[in-house]
Image (spheres, one colour):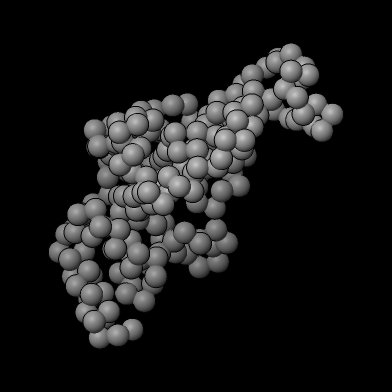
Amino acid sequence: MSEDGSSQVLALLKRWEKSNLLPWKVLDLEDRLAKEFRAYEIPLTAITADDYANDVEVREDLIYKLFTITHPDVLSRIYSAEELEMKDIGAEAYDEGWQNVFVPERTPQRSDPRTQPVLGDASWLSYNLLNIQHSTGQRSSIVLEQENGLVTGAKVYGMSEYLGTFMTAVTGYRESEPNDDRNYYSMITGDMNDESFMYYLECLALHGFI
């Protein structure tokens, strides 16, 4: 690391040490999300239990609420121009994605949605709808984890670097533990040589927490 880089790291570390940050209480963070991002709660089951269980960013035994953001003014603020461009998937793919919202499985023999069987149980509909809106920039969502009334983790759905860095600043990463096979998203608090911890400090600085 260069001398300038080392100085910046030390400066961030000192700002963090002076800040004496405490974990967010669940009600305080929920209020912040509602006011700053106009986020509102939707059923946690809108994302499947299998998705939570198979996601290394989520501790499914700690998740307790799912919030979502749909206000156009907020979305335009939290998506960069590059992210919006990446979400522009083209007219044909966009149309096909919306058709697939209402058709759980489509085969070559039934590629025309008009030939699909009549819909029965549509409990999967909200899941499909959530996914396509995440992928097309019409929605971002946040699942929160809590322990003893404190928010200790979060996962952002729908590509937004701004929202992702904000939630990293709010929650940090889980503490690294030996022999933990799910500790990719973890950090060693206070260790200047730990990349995840230093990224956490950068997120704190980016959003004005330190």
